[in-house]
Length: 476
Image (tube, rainbow, N blue to C red; front, side, top):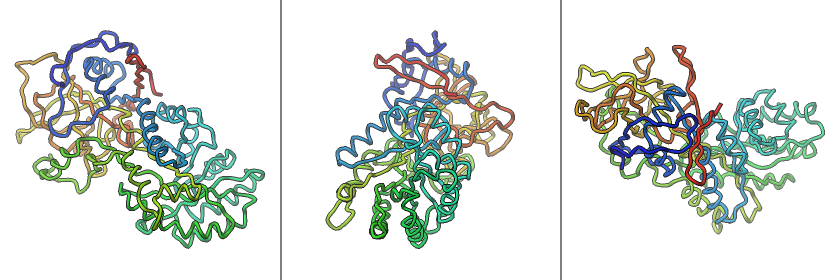
């Protein structure tokens, strides 16, 4: 399907009306899972991507907001099947795309904000203050002030933060009742700096019980690292006595916010397991196998994960869903990465291919490891790029296959997109593109900067209407 694809017009794509000749070549090892709309966009005319890189620069992030809506609907189907009342908050921190925040607002979910700037972006996108959930341990006094005046839902990370809110609310919102969650630190996260242990939780509950006329206690929040259903169920077990304590103090919890951690499947699970089994240091340009990776080949997608959580035993006689329903509780979710599943691709233009002394190659691209951040965490983005060859058809003068790593354009030796040596069936050339799929989740712009005075990478929005026509607009 991928080799020497036919080149046809792809509809209305901004100013791109006459796409160049080009061909797309699929990777052989860890092929990206692609939504059919994205696959169709790439297959229909690879040359249009070259023209978009010419027009907007490289690296270029192409955002697809409709994917967020699809992901929201998939979550809703699971929650409705279990008849669970719910509140979904899109994590604005997942990337800097305003189009995705706007998509979240348009499909009727809230926005999880962790800074004054994220909050203001959400408001500009059309969100209302009551639909915001403010999380994070380091909220500033200015951020608190606007949240209290909103009022937004505030997740209180510490006893110290509650004290700050009590003091601020007396002058900022004397006639309103700010809505608060208390963030619990589960036993499995005892060393974490986030959330509160049981003693601080009890102290905060007692303070809120004495201040029912000033604050509305909404419930409990936790957020765990990793993607195990079992740790979330255990955290819910640990909250049961705190629920009873709150009720005994005359407080009525309405919300249990379990944070995020819903997995995304980037590549085929069997391919991923085989890669992990057979990888060795010779597969990396620095001869180092990273100690950990995101689980790119998850066996479960986010919807199946959520279904499994809701069906898990919570008490001796009740599933998680039954316990939530029997206690008339709203399940809140903050699934940042999984709501952005398939919502962006990133385009890197190749500037030079250099043969190295050892026989391999370094492919230099416009962009840097700041534009694809996993190597900064001593890991790798284990999704192979799609090569878009600027020259149409088979070129007899083009060598192949070749093995290469992807290097950034800075003067830093460790500025690499991937340390992993990638196999290309034909040698990439200057002017070709590398397309990384599914980069919206903490990948495309987490560390971007203007090193060497290079401008910040651009984002553009790709929308696809019911007739399959595509349109490009800026995402500024």
